[in-house]
Image 1 (cartoon, rainbow, N blue to C red):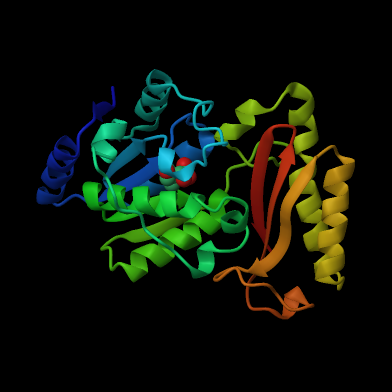
Image 2: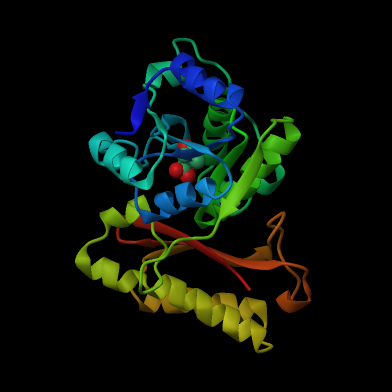
Length: 282
Ligand code: PAF
């Protein structure tokens, strides 16, 4: 079985022993409820380093009080089994008290790339993510850390934080894993009813159509409006954003996205009680 450790001291003991033996180490931070998307991060890490550590911690600091912290799917035994099958060397599963001891008072405060999109829709989110990821990187001392491009803005924020704070780790982005019909894999897909799951494919389809329209010379504002209309027609009750942005700093693009260096389409929309996010490059 993949070994499970629950304290920072035990985690460091393992990582330092591997490093002393000349091995390189990857950290794959997760909130559990693992699916093939997470396992693809581990597989990517295994092509780069000898040892992989997955962390599973449902981080309360990145959920607002009205969000789904309590409902978030949890299942350590299943997660540990999947990690074992994937050949992951270590599971770090700390308690809330290990991560946020009594009196914990430090939060990372961000500006810039964290502000639009997810930052506007979920103002507490990136402060919580940056705080826990920074702690995990300091705790595990990995050579690399792997994050999915599925949470594209999160990946850009983490790249920014590690550069700004001089954290000695390489951040690696991994391509989004998708179901056969194109829906991005996400732990929150478990919230969808069968009918919602069938409708959810409208999200990647609307994004592909918007990219095709802009590639064919269409205006980006028209492609964004058409994408939002397609989601409404498919039963999405609210679109938080469906925006073409600069892939690096997520700033708004000029009227012709194809003239911009690296355009990226990012979207977040609600299907019933489930908020789905996705993004695609050109
Ligand atoms: O993407 C996630 O699962 C989480 O935001 C992360 C990076 C593990 C931090 O809690």
